[in-house]
Length: 489
Image 1: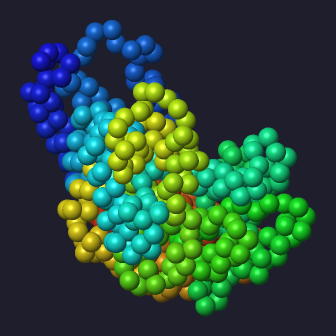
Image 2: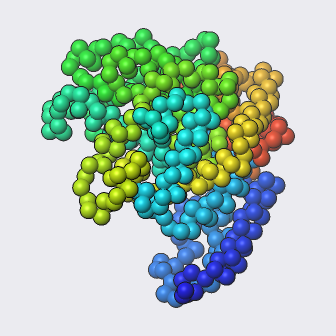
Image 3: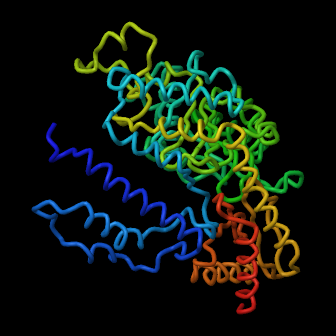
């Protein structure tokens, strides 16, 4: 074997150095030696490298040094104990180790024959999580439905729109050149993630309807208005439009609200609308009985997304995507397209699924090995434990907020997310104060980094307990920092 392009001795030596460097950085991050967001300006990295690539090879020691000294300082540190923004992007040591194996052998995994173990391991882990999350049994690979690990949740939602559109065309017995396609209407809840509207846009759906939300006093959160939803759908039908897709959320980005899946599912069933459940963040919580009980109606879903890079610790990419009918999905994604090089006896004569028919891309990364290592190394109990730990820290932060007469909790805290705001009798002034407070907080991200949001004209602050390294002591220091900054307003 030529050692010029793959030298196992160098692999071990340089690989060990890389693992040591990464491990050191994790230790330093936990010790708060770096801010969450780097203090760099656009173009900072480009000016450190030549315009053209090197002509001759350079040593891996030099490349490693540049990685540590030039590239690492420009990272936003999502694993930082004081990262409280957005939603988490979590990783565990097991997933990092598995990433080495995932990359090592270059398996594209587009069909069973291309890498049998890769395809079958993905079958195994998606089935494991049907049991782990207590999903309806129809999503098991042996039944009508099934699952995959999508590139991202956004990819999965786009595919759900595509398959829903194809299903409706089949129901109406029309082709893409039919004028009726221009009357298709897709629905998403007002508080939904922007990827829902993007998916409809990419599928050229002209009619995109935002379903209004209302504040539910019992839940202390903003959820979809069921009565208005029915009114909008029926009005669209009366005006000649064709409802075909509806997406709701279990764990909205803004406030971690849980839309009523059972009621929306029944509406979609009545009007023959594809029902998508975006549970990217909170779907992982179904591993805990208390939260699974809040998701009544999952059996009505045509598709579900759960991102194991968020509340779980799989790292990117870990987006579980389940569909009610895998044959319908594969057909809509072009599994009948004739291409000689794909033909083989296993696809044609055995009960195997080629994941090229579940996505837009042909090649597929070996992401299932990362999920396999995470599940095996933590077990279901460990997966529950790390979620409950984050919830406990968030409850402590909630108590700190409630102890102040200048702040109030905005919506009911859920699954590690606390929404709050600095109170003022005038809403316009209140919004300005909270926006300014966010700016002051994010000027020094060594002490904390947050992202605010707005709903129904109210701007509020969000603290998401993102990492297992975040402790009660961390949030206490952060809260004291907020109180000091408030004095400047």
